[in-house]
Structure formats: structure tokens, C-alpha cells
Image (cartoon, rainbow, N blue to C red; front, side):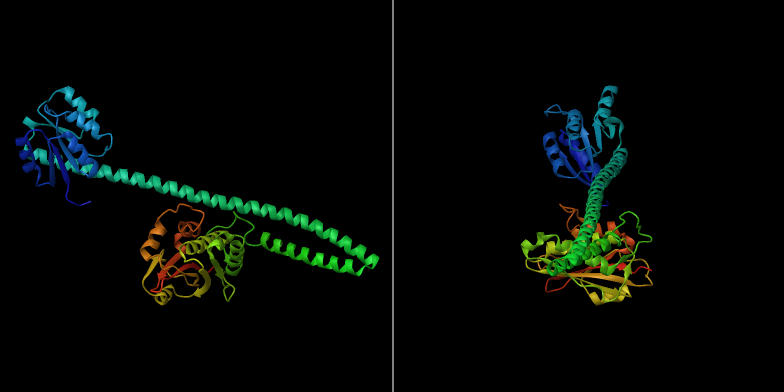
Length: 401
């Protein structure tokens, strides 16, 4: 911070105020008070860099030590120089108690020394304020990360529960298929045409259900913990099929007549991402588009193969936002999951804030999840908003080798 320092002077004698102002104005902007209550009110509303406080103010309701004690109730970072003619040990102890920066004895402190002391106090205040801000920011980020990771844990727990349920259902369907075989045998023996047709239809339905369950349980989403970012591969179209089923099973957007229309990739490709994490990232991106879209407006999701990112960015055009631009070219190319929707009530500045702002509900449309689940080094995001209010979000992920 290089802005002009703000120095507060509290002194009940007018000649002393004039002298102090002349002494300190070469350092920064000086504001002076003779009333400690007014000085406290000023500090509550302004960010002061240093305070020079007289101790003995017999005409005032409180003295300098009591002023600093009141100040410390709401500002622990401001460096205060106690200015007094009293050099006693008792006053020194009181100054330490209220965490005064230094004590300047009037008869022993020159103009030069007071200026140097004030400059040091300003530096001390600014350092403390920065540490306080950094600590607060770190705590907030930790809380946000904890909540976000908690939402991932919830997703995995729910997915594991569903998987256990499907295993149980598959076992029961296998038993039902066995009963169907018995019915078919009995129908054959009884030469009952209607029963034979019913048994055949029963077998067809059960076999199809078992095949669908086996494809899911034995497919890329079966083992939740084994895939790592280093060696994980997700089939694009398989993931998009799972995303379709996810939105088909979530009717909450139907009340606003909103939907997601998903197209497959024309050629079969895999990308360098764990299947479940790719599914999570795509879901959050699509839900974000749903949240900001107009009622009765679909969100379209269409994947494209991209060989050169720079050419792709040129094709998208300006204005746009680019997050996590890769430092080097990926030789095999990328798959861009392009989502579009009509969102005329939002601008790119708001979208940028949404990428950095933690949402009220981290489980729905949380843009933090894109980088968090896939990694910043393999998850470039481009957002474009044209003049007609059509927002396009492109999630670009390297093709897996």
C-alpha cells in the first residue's frame, strides 16, 4: 500500500496541536482532535495509519490511556504513540498494558525523532493490517474448501449408496430371471401359448434391465477411488450419457421449464480425467448455465474436438473470459464441452465474480468445482457473451493418450 498515510493527533491544548500538525504534515495527511470521543468515532469510520495521543487531558472525560483502551476494543492493529511529559515507570506499564507502540516523552523527543517514530508506527500498522487481512482470507478460503470438499464427499457417498442399491437390485433381478425360466419351462410343458408369450416378454425385460445395470456397475463409474488425475481416462460419450440420466432423474428445473439438451461427440474419444470427476464438473457447469438462463430456455451441451486452443479462442471471439490457460500445447488436442444458453441479464463481470465467489449452495452450479475436480492444469474454461445475450461456456480438457 503506497497511498498517503493518515495520521490522527489527539491533544487538548491548541498550541500543541498546531506544533504537531506542522511536524507531521511532511509525512502524511494529519487530522487532529481535542475531544477523545470524536476521535474514537473518526477511527471507527476511517482507516488510520498512526495515532499520536496525549496522556493528560484534564478537561476531557477520559485521558489518553483510557482512550487507547477504548480503541483496542475495535482496532488492535493501529499503532499508537503515547505522548506525555511523564517519564514514570507506572505510566510505562500502563502504555504496555494498552499495547501502545511507543512512548514519546515531550521534553526528550526531538522533531526528527518524532517523525521517524511516526514513520515506523505507520509501517507497523500497515504490516499488522495486512497480516490480519491475510489471516481472515486464509480462514475464509479454508472454510470454503472444507465445504466444497464436503460436498464432494457427499457426492461420493451418495454415488456409493446408489451403487450398493443397484448391486442389490441386480441380485434380485437375477433371482426373478430364474423364476422366469421356471415359468417358461412350465408353459412349454403345458403348451400354453399365452403363458409362453408372457414368459418371453418377462425374460426380455429382465435381461435388458440386467444388461443396463451391468454396463453401469462394471463400467468407468464403478470404482470411485481407483482413478487418479495422472492416469485417468473418461469416455466422452459414456460420460454424457450418464449426464443425461442425471438430469432426467432431476425434475427440479422443469418448474421453470428449463432443460439440458446434450449431443454426443461424433467420434469416440477419451479425455484425461476421472469419469466421475468429469461428470461432476459437467453437471456443475450445466447447472450454472441453468441458474442464469431465462425461463423456458434450454441449455445445449455439444462436445467438439479441438486441435489448437489458440485457433479455437480466435473462433470464439471477443469479449471473453479465459481461466486456466495452459502454459504449453497439448500435442493430442482437446475436447471442448460447449454449453450455450440465453442469459441477457448477466454480464462477464458477474460471471468472473461467480468463478471466485463461493455460492450459497455449493452442491448446485458451483464453478469452483471445475478446477477443484479436474485440476487447473487440465481444465481451461472460456466464457463468451454475445450482443444478443447468448452465453457460451467452453470446458476444454486434454484428450487422453
